[in-house]
Image 1 (cartoon, rainbow, N blue to C red):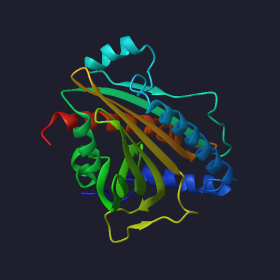
Image 2: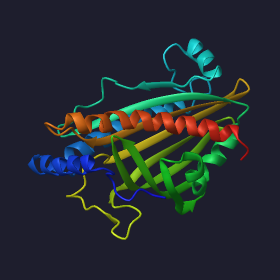
Image 3: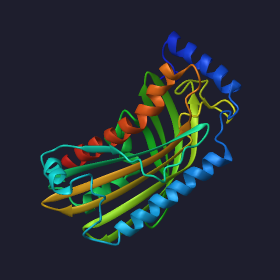
Image 4: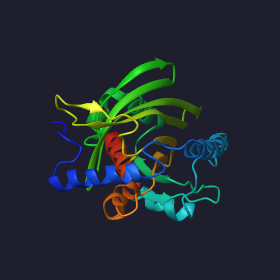
Length: 274
């Protein structure tokens, strides 16, 4: 059953009331500024340029997470490698936070074809990615290009439900090397999900937990299995003054935790019969 409200205790209701006050007092408001959107788009473009260069090379298809030899041994022993990417080109944006995380894993016996089949099967996402993904479906498909919508739930002190729409594109260097990009086109925060009062908050009422999100997968079949790497770039509002104790754990922890969850869930899905 879906949650009845975004916040499931009186304390959380009080928190959101405080956040409303902080948002109203903020010069940035609930919507991202044009400067924040431009900075996110510019940063994403630089990441995509780097990824396009990687994806032209079989020998450098994945970004090396630190010492590649040592870390590949860790990966083959079942470890996940999660790291925050903080390059010199990552901008500081007034009123907004840009986060960039990368995760890498290895799945013994898995193939690139199996991974691609799993990721294109959006209708089964609630099966593989519960409890984060509540429902998902394809709105439009043209070859390897998809427009997909998902209802997602994120929880870290606060519980937030969002309806999201993404443009997703898959590509290959060859049958053993593949990649995909997923760019958010709409993210709506849902109030009272799963009830008769359910509705999407308008732009002035949303809390800015997630304004934009791009996700990039790279996967390489070798060493008797599949190396898979995911990078996530997200844009959210900055932490309101005086509410860091409540909001900071959500906006700072959720991007990393969501990426790690997705990587583990994908690995688990590839280990079970499709």
